[in-house]
Amino acid sequence: MMIETDNVKIGGLNKLKYAIIGYPVAHSLSPEMHEAGFKTAGIDATYERITIHPLELTAGISDLKANHFNGFNVTYPLKEKIIPFLDGLTSEAQAIGAVNTVKIENGLLYGHNTDGQGFVEALRRQDFDFNSKKVVILGAGGAAKAIAVSLACLNVYLLILNRTSEKAAALAEQVNLLGGKASGDILAPGTWLESVDLLVQTTSVGMKSEPYLFDLQGINPAAWAVDLIYNPAVTSLLSNAALHGCRTFNGLDMLLFQGVLAWDFWFGVKAPVDSMRKALVDKLSVCSE
Ligand SMILES: NC(=O)c1ccc[n+]([C@@H]2O[C@H](COP(=O)([O-])OP(=O)(O)OC[C@H]3O[C@@H](n4cnc5c(N)ncnc54)[C@H](OP(=O)(O)O)[C@@H]3O)[C@@H](O)[C@H]2O)c1
Image (cartoon, rainbow, N blue to C red; front, side, top):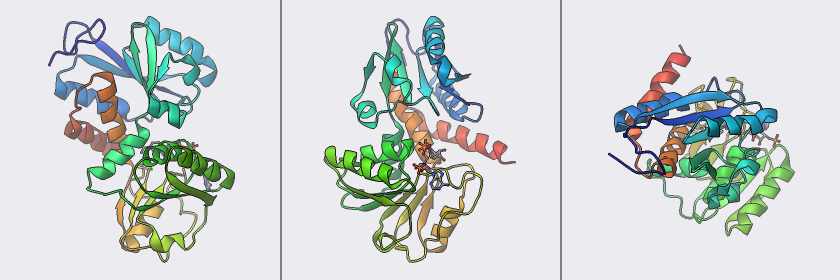
């Protein structure tokens, strides 16, 4: 494989440089995932973790440019803060108002967001058909926003529930402006449980293996339940959903496919999904030992 970018060739003489930036980034699994992909695809590239404090973003971006990075991923808390530093945004990044993937070409920075499409792709690979489905999103933070915007054009009925109900209402309004069908409300159990087809848990509740905020008693047993958290692999919400008969997934495949879609943006080539997934699974099994 030999693909031309501005001044380098994938697998050519120049080593490509990628990174993940955030604060903190020590926990990120992206380096293992992308390095495994580079190795399988024969791309001569490195991928580093780079900690950048939000107040030092100006200097951090200058360093990335000066050190000839070809691109990077962006994680908490920089996904929105990075936008003023970018020279261009894809329509997805613009609609979501946040960036998780940046490409550097001729010294210019282009931002994209693959989080929402990564979620959609992860479910499509499991043969989930979104058409006319009732989707309930628990939470209205950054991840929920990326997913809701990606679902806006998929002919789903979206209910967004959040502790701060104003944020749920604002996100629903944004989805409707994009042509979707959404409403927002306070995060609580309700009659929605009986008719939901896809439940998407996007709050940070469960990261410390704590019990979820409510029981899913009465949930449609044919519903699929996804928790964006992947460590722990089974949150209390997922075990509760399984108890009620639902098919369950954690956030590992969303993480995988946001990375896979970053390859389309960086290289314009298909990523080696299997080796990237194996790297994630291997790293997580070490982390949970
Ligand atoms: N699998 C993946 O690839 C992937 C990608 C991105 C994120 N994630 C995971 O998704 C989760 C959210 O990330 P984010 O970036 O969206 O975070 P965020 O922007 O900070 O949003 C956090 C959300 O959680 C809600 N929340 C927090 N504590 C709560 C509590 N005690 N009770 C009820 N609601 C609570 C917040 O509600 P309020 O608005 O009321 O504060 C908000 O809706 C994290 O666990 C993150 O690791 C996974």
